Amino acid sequence: MSTQEQNPQAIEKTLSSRFPTAYTILFLLIIFVAALTWIIPAGKYERVMNTEVGREVAMPGTYQVVEAKPQGFVDVMLAPTAGFYNPDSYVANAIDVALFVLFLGGFLGVMNATGAIDTGIRSAMQRMQGRELWMIPILMTLFAFGGTTYGMAEETLAFYAILIPVIISAGYDAVTGVAIVMVGAGIGVLGSTINPFATVIAANAASIPFTDGMGLRLVLLIGGLVISAAYVMRYAQRVKEDPSRSVVAQQWAAHRAYFIQTKANESAQSKLTGTQSVALIIFALTFAVMIWGVSSQGWWMAQMGGLFMGSAIVIGLIARLGEKKLTASFVDGARDLLGVALVVGLARGIVVIMEQGMIADTILHSAETTLGGLPELAFINLMFWIEVGMSFFVPSSSGLAVLSMPILAPLADFAHVDRALVVTAFQSANGLVNLINPTFAVVLGGLAIGRVSYDRWLAFIWPLLLILTVFISAVISIGALL
Image (tube, rainbow, N blue to C red; front, top):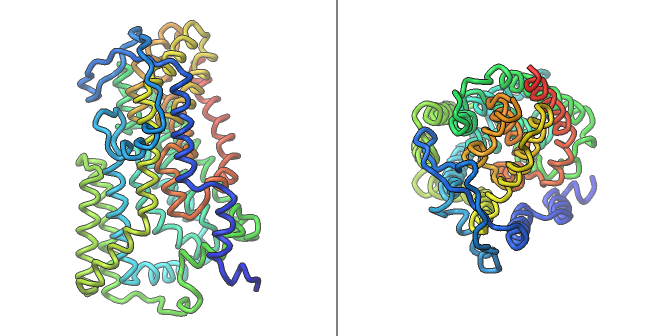
């Protein structure tokens, strides 16, 4: 055994030094966007309150150039803080998401202290031996269902730390685990059907029923899911047959050491005790209640954070951890996800700089002038690529819908394109970009939990992105011709 294999943490540290961390990438993007505010003219649209959407929306034809507000050194330094809480932003603040992440970490810390997850993983692997590959399409379908129905995004952060140990124990790598969650939910958002944060808001802003265009979106959802599941399964099978083909092959030992028990503990019991079984039942019920609350009761981060904290207390009491061990486990778990919480604020800081520099509306106005009078095929494909570009700067599906749809959707009338197709192009572009978007906190947050560097994620996903881009373009082009 080599020295690097004996010390997996050392090799992971060496490898991670070759590519900037998520924090550096995001801070450099803040600086880059601040520099753009010195180059791109400032401008704004007039906005009115749309009661159906519940937000102010831009009015077409009201764009005007305003006094420039270039962002300097002080603005850059304040952007991460403003990303956590900025009452004037049209994009949701990050403080609630960051706190949810910390409560989630505490909940997982208490669960880990019971030993139920580790024992459950060993038991599950024994029972599923030889059939592990089919976990991939089943789980991706479940995450896609969450994405298409209620825009599952930040909620996925709860699943990485749970799923990745199972995937690694089955002989796959951490990238496979990340892909199941991130790509599964992402495809659901890309093919949103009744997602209130993408389809419904965008359709309302475009002044059409959200059910218009549902058939085409179902084609995107089902086709995208089949393509993505097949891609992840093929990659996972290759990795299991030959671990050297993993895009994180050199981190294999480090990931196994971090996500699953060391060999000294691998011989431990694989049969759950009664207390551990009850803990796992509460664990599963917690996520079921979370999904129910978000999808039907209007829950958001505060309610979900309270749910995880309450469940952690209940599990700690049932497992008889004691007050000191319960609180220490909760704090240690929150500490493990502190970096993820910081990533969330940094990502939102980019949007803050754009808003304060008043360049978002200028970028949108350029799109408005570019699209006028184009034929159907050129119009819808250019619309898709404009939304792709804007998604990098405004990753929030609801924020981008409110920003762009009131301006771009009416242009479809001049190109003789159904407005519903514009909504479809918007949500598919936003969903596609948010599989890799470094300004989308869920991407870098999920990668941070999975201990997968951003460059390794790009190495894995770029062929899938290319395939999905061709697929989406074909679907919306056919939609424009029908």
